Image (cartoon, rainbow, N blue to C red):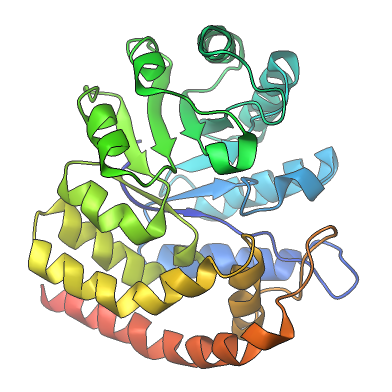
Length: 302
């Protein structure tokens, strides 16, 4: 399946005592399909992958694959701190039916660029899934440079990159490497419209958990080159972009999802949204239904 458009990095719903809320998980998946989302990521950083057991990881992924039923791509977060563990997790995701592996640069260990090339080639050749590179140096302490990506784009089993750095120069350098079968995806909600207007294939989003129709419309407009309409849609979402970065991801997102009925909280060391920001979460959550309805209506008219 093509990797393009609005792809959601799914949050993982938990119950009041920290257990998986599988009812909320199924409802969140259905809400994404109904809202027009064009792909989902299970157990990425937004999904609190580091807080999941292997059994929970497999359960979430298998339910997602079953619920989605081949309608859109299912990507599994499989990146670990070393290559052998990443390969093992990627194989586990393949066995659950995932279509792609989203492989973050190994966090904490800070490999060299040559080490990253060797790492990604090994995962692509031994992990049993097509690999999407994922660069988010603010979380990992490791920056996957464009010249390193250039060494990987021709590998037949490396099919894209999620780039979370927001500088235009970084996106431009990656867009110069695009080829058939290698997608360049933004990983930064606030600058995604700019990236797609410049030629990026889509967005792997946090905010689309709560606003799938609105983010689908943003992606459609930007990918169509309609700058004025895309910027208007982006302005509609600007306050959400700012709120979702007000504390560490996914804390603000989980506050919105809780208010929408999708789970109750986070797992330590993450904690609930600070009290000072909760009135804003209440106000934004109350706007979501109207924004989703407007975005769906305008998409139908268009």
